[in-house]
Structure formats: C-alpha cells, structure tokens
Image 1 (spheres, one colour):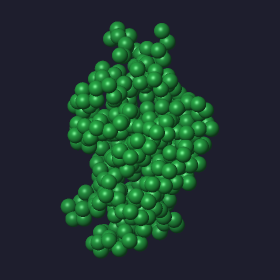
Image 2 (spheres, helix red, strand yellow):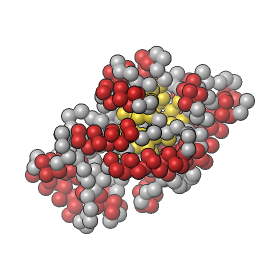
Image 3 (cartoon, helix red, strand yellow):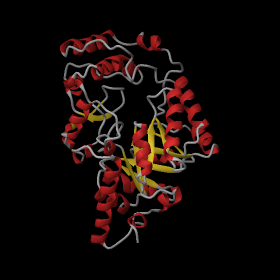
Image 4 (tube, helix red, strand yellow):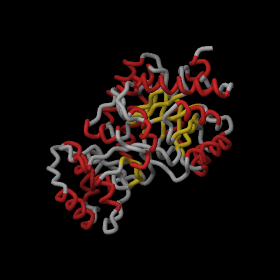
Length: 366
C-alpha cells in the first residue's frame, strides 16, 4: 500500500487529493504548490480587491489545472454598508489617533507612500459583495468562510457548484454552522494563528466531531507535523487545516526581516492581540503588540475602525522595515518551522512522519 493510500480519508477520496491536508495561505504561488504536493490549497482573499481576486484565482487555476482548490473570505456581521473611508475616519477618537502618532514618533516610522493593506479599502458590505461576485463567477472549487457564514452566501455558492467550509472555534459556533448547508467544518483551536478562540485544539476537535455527525471535520491549531496529523485523525477529524506551516516556505513571498523573525520564533513568542483589526489575532510578539498591551494604551477599536486607525502605519512599518514593530500572524506551531523549505518538502515530511507513526501504531485512518 502506498503512503498516499495509507493516509486517505473519506473526505480526501471524495475530493481527489492525495493527502488529507488543507493548506491556507495568502500567497497564490504557495496555494498552487500545496495543490501540486497533494494537498488542497486555499487562498486567503479577504484583504484583496475584487479585481485582484479575479486575477489571482485565474492564475491559480492555470497553475493547478483540474486539481481542486479553494478561496477564503472573512465575512463578519456589523460591517458598514459602503466603502467610505472618510466616514470611518470621522468616527476615530482623538485619543486613539494620538496614541498611534506616539508610536510613529517613538519608533521613527517614515510616512507611508501608499495606503496599508488594512486601510486601502473599508471592510464593508459593499466590498464583500463585490468580492463574492468575483468568487461566484470563478471556477474555484470551495468557498471557506473564516468569520461568519451567511446562509444566502452558502446557498449561492452551492448552487454554483462550490463546496462550502466554515471555520468554528467553539461548539456554539459549530451548532450555528451546522444549521446551514455546510459541507465541511474546521475545528480551529486556541493554538491557531490569526483569528482564534479560547478552546484548545485537543479539547475542541472531538466535541466538534461529535456534533458534526456526517459532516467532515478538519482539525486546525498547532498542526505542524505528521504526528499532529495522526492525532487529528485519531480524534475523528477527516484531515487537517494548516496555515502557519507555509509561512517559512520558499514559495511564500515575505519581507526577509519578517521571515527571520518567524524562523527563530517559539510557541511562546506568539500573542493574541486586537491591535491590528479589532478582532483577536494571534501573531508574532513585537513592540507593536507590547505597545497596545501596555496599561495606559487605549483599547483597540472594533473592526473596521481599527483597520483604518492603524492600517497606513502598519503599511509604513513593513514598507520601511521598522524591525521592532514588524510582526505577522502565526500560530503556536511556528516553533516547528526554523528553516526555509519548499512546500513539497514540508508536505513530504508530514506524510513520511505520519506513515512512520502508523507503522508504530499498526493501524490506518478511518
């Protein structure tokens, strides 16, 4: 029996992928590489314009041929109706603006020459609608809903032949998602990078599996190795959802200064902060997260106000490589990735370690 066959699950067989590994990444080249390595690549498109999404999905399809891949959007409720930056700026408290100016002055951050990634458009219903239009018109195989899974969006995606996946961080969120026609759930534990909840992966995954019934579940949060993959399968998951694993790969485009921070980081070098967007975001600890965690710091604003408050400064920090303030979303699994490797090499090591674990256990996944 080949290594591919040994690790197959019902979900991976259904999708026609060699490994039960879903790879979430913001880099189209990394998405394509994950697909070619036998996994299911998912492109994080939330901070991309509709036109960029159209271009990038077409580019990925050209690279992967008929291999399946997905796209992820974060669709929180309560966003403003229109993409009106001036209206958001008018709501920013003076104390918060002064605090941001203090950080800029303290660390000598030069002015940005362009809007930051978080502030070049307002997270709004208008932009989300246009992003979704591009996705619905595309031939992408799966829509992943990172935060929020509106029923009308799910039904429309399914009507256009796409699978729909929802990320959940608690049994409450899982029950809400399962009341809708969801195809796949991701049980994302506290260990995970970016937007994460309060329940640890080992506590969360079995609960979600029990709730989900016939709906397949992927395990996320702290997943880095073949041992983690086997643990996920043992808990009843049909595969794993990995994001941090690809950040240090050769395919992932990133400031070299940031890459070096990631390569030397341990699990305890990550912190959860609301300072980037107003939502919880696990990231590499930096002077940025420390400044916002100080006792006299203002409380971060809700999304999208925080986006607009700090977006241009965050863009300037990366543009001018202001090292103390530079940071990146990453999960606690970052401790396992301390050298630059290709996506294929990362996938190969996961598969080989998982197969070695099966040999020790004398079994096979369900």
